[in-house]
Image (tube, rainbow, N blue to C red):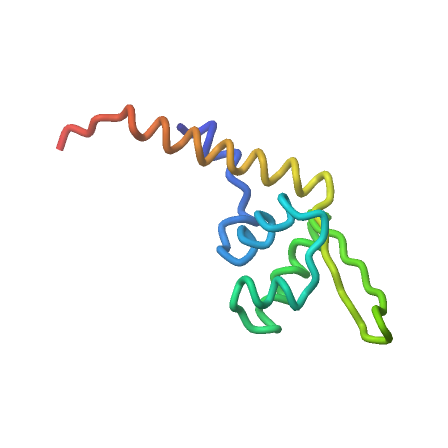
Amino acid sequence: MKEHLDRVDKAFENSIRLSIMALLMVNATVDFNSLNKLLGTTDGNLSSNLSYLISLKYVAVKKRFINKKPNTSYSALEAGRKAFKSHIEAMEKIILHSKKITLNL
């Protein structure tokens, strides 16, 4: 089981960051307001978690204007996609391995 635990990415231990990546894995881009609405978090909390994922180069940010209004959108980078897939695979293997273990209590 240790080899699977070593593949768990600390970046996704936080539920907000895990949710952000899950959304970005199935959507090409998601804007800040949509993420905020879907996750039900504060602007500051969402912003700090996005900044963390951006610093790891897991997520890209794009700032632009739409109808003269600022719009910030995010997308998963290849490194983020690989890290997230590896994390999910490791979690699945831990769960499957745990089912096979019988504890002698």
